[in-house]
Image (cartoon, rainbow, N blue to C red; front, side, top):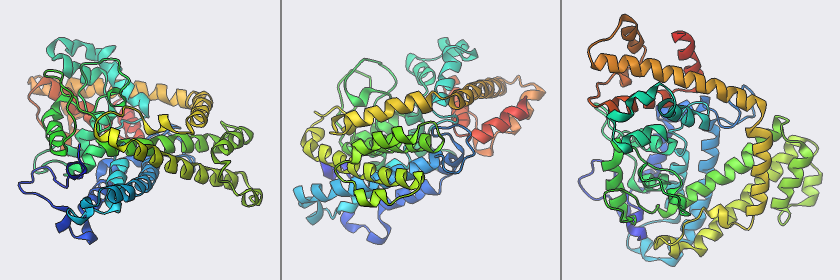
Length: 443
């Protein structure tokens, strides 16, 4: 892979080249990506989607929106630091093509901002609830009518693939959805493969899948334009990830490790003594003891340690990336950056404590159970009505039900797979609160 290709400014539908050297630096294409995501309806809906504590009304607990904003800030810092060194190493990127260190930060920030945009309501249990509707619920009836890959898209419903669809899928009058630059889409694509085949692998890019069959052709176009390395596996589409996707992943890993932990502390799910012990291990080399001892409240002490911890993890992620940059470009590096971090043991300790005290807390489990019931009910009712409409046998109830679909979702889809994905997409874009309202309204 080459940075010249990887930093492509091309957008869906372009017929000519977009050259960095011709860009207006006051309105840079990569920064336009960020703006388009910020102003999009799917991004705004993240303000009422679960991060850790579902349906929490507490001011200081993060939603998907605040989490995404924080990941983008961390991603921008990581990207800029990496970009500075990459431009120094490959001066022709600046001298001939016009790229700047901040371009890397802008790409990573935009991709980081969008990294959760395809996640359903009720956290990761939302993804599982959609998948289990098809693998265990009434959706099982459709299996024999779908191809193996179409079926796998549904039973392993994946927020990353759904996010790619949100960012790129056309609808009448809106070609290419947000029409982001291919560089930003590449950085967003953490898992550049389709849902099948599922093969155990130590390659981080194989952990999940990154696009649905509905988006396969455009995904391939983006990957080829960026020069991603294709892994030859017959008709199965699989690539190695864009180098900047490692930075997006690191920003997310840093934020959910540290900030989810902070939420648990503020909610009283993790004791301050435990918190201080775990966080101080991350910051012992950079902490200002006098400044720390002058802080009189728990909130201020935790905030100070959190900021230091994130700063240390940012610098470490940059170091790991730059040490392995050539291997990454050759497709020979297959690990998350945080897996190679000198702080890996400390991060793992924090995650283990978070799993025990936060993710498996009674409040979280109760709300996830509620989410399963709601998503199962909504899928069942809307899929039945939508398919009945296609087959010309709608009941009066079906007709009323379809009238409450948002206007942009009242589209006709020809194939069963497209219809099922269309309703899954609609449900996935609901906020936690709207999913509750729909469920109460439909009874």
